[in-house]
Amino acid sequence: MSYTRKMAWRNYLVEGFLILASLIIILPMLIMIFGSFMDSVQVMKFSLRLPTEWHFSNYVTVFREGGLARAFWNGILITGVSCTLNIFTSSAAAFILTRRETKVSNFLYMFFFMGLIAPMSTITTIRVVQWLGFYGSISSVILIYASLNTAFSVFLYSGFIRSIPKSLDEVAFLEGAGTVTVFLRIITPLILPVNATVAIMVFMSVWNDITIPLYFLTDSSDWTMPLSVYNFYGKFSRDWNLIFADLVLTSLPVFILYLFCQKYIVSGLTAGAVKG
Amino acid sequence: MKISRKLYSYYLVLPALLIYCIFFVAPAVAGLFYSFTDWRLDRVGLKFIGWDNFERIFTDKTLLLAIKNTLIFAVVTVIGKNLLGLALAIGLNMRLKTRNILRAVFYSPSILSVLVISIVFTPMLRSDGAINRIFESVGLGFLAQNWLTNPHVVIWTVAAIAIWQHAGFQMAIYLAGLQSISKDYYEAATIDGAGAWTSFRSITLPLLLPALNINLMLTLIGGLKVFSEVFVLTGGGPGNASQVVGTIILRSFGEGSWGLGTAVNTLLFAAVTVIAIPLLIFMRRKEVSEQ
Image 1 (tube, each protein chain N blue to C red):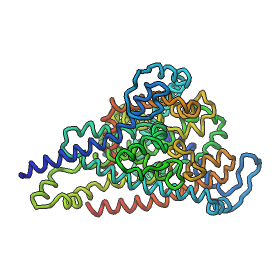
Image 2 (cartoon, rainbow over the protein chains, first blue to last red):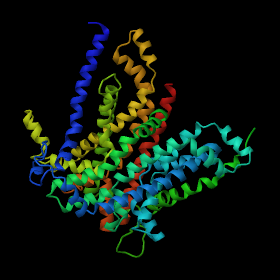
Image 3 (tube, rainbow over the protein chains, first blue to last red):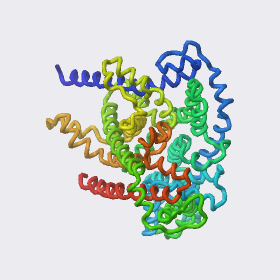
């Protein structure tokens, strides 16, 4: 057998094996999706089957009983504001820290970098938020998410801003522009794709999280989708068709984002993989 | 021409620094202080009690089990996510017809909430659930288990679900690393008569070190911080069989023993720092020396 023929055979073998392996991922997802359209009896078999009758009404029920519209808007508000805040503050900080190149700026960079490693101290954070007088509020959660993602964003922005030639700022400075103008007019347009990457990464992690709402949102009307789904799961543990519909609805926003913004996710991952 | 550094004013760092310090650093520092006190919900004053909280952590059976479980989870998921992720990346870096769709399929669970995955798996892991039924139908009935109710198995089950969900994320990072390696190296090696294994060991592995580095760090740190998987799948049960550090902190918070809770957190902080920082320095050095 020739070398290329052998290579072709090897590729077919690998491909066949990987397709088979992908079923391990696909089948549980299908059980969830099909199950979300079944009636409450058929779904209890938890087996892979098309629904005998498609009950689209499950989704309506879930929306009404689970208070999902409210949770959806809470999620949009929390993720949207914390993303925006994070993008502005982190890119501005990364701009200064990479440009100054002094001992202080290097120290500050490492200080931010520690946040990537260290676990957050939940109970004392609650204490701090109580002391500031807004424990239980959505705005406290927004600020906490902004702070938790600062390390990651500063790290990502620094890598990209370093690759922008300093001479660009210098020309602007010579023409009399101030720091803020240079940042907004020169740097920000150049790092727009990074903004997209950060926005998507932060959006996904915040949208999916249950830990922070669990500790910090005391009023159920402020909950985000995953936490209200968890609550729903406890209450309606017999109606698995509704639970599955609820899970599908929670996953839909991130899934749509993933479909349309894959290239920004990939560029974020590449930055990590190549620069370490 | 040199532009004065002063033009890059630190004012622009301030907003990020303030948010980061108030909501992340200050609580961490306060945590250090509070872990040496008897801080409780139902008490007004505070008393310094030295190392008492830590002594309790290392004598209490449940707390020790939680630490052991956290370590098991971390080690198992680091190995599983990285081995599977690397294998998938190598396979999907080959010229396959379906590779784009397969990449998307393997990556997709990692974009979903841990909560979603954990709830979907709960009925499948019951003793009469889909997983045991599959084992029985292929003649591997002896492998059937009470995945979530057998105290000896449960933490391994949780780790397996975490690997199922996130191996694709590691795969994506390895893939990015693999794609940055020039094909010329492999051609040169083939001409010199190197086999697949030799090429892998002397080209792929060294050039993949940055990706390996970041993946090991991410999985290890993520593993030690585990919370949501255990919280949703088992709630720490049966009994306390699957408690981890993250769920113990929640429980201490709920019980109002905040001093103890922060002490557990401080311990986690110390463990992560002690493990992660030397690893980071060591790998940085290795990376440079192999270039």
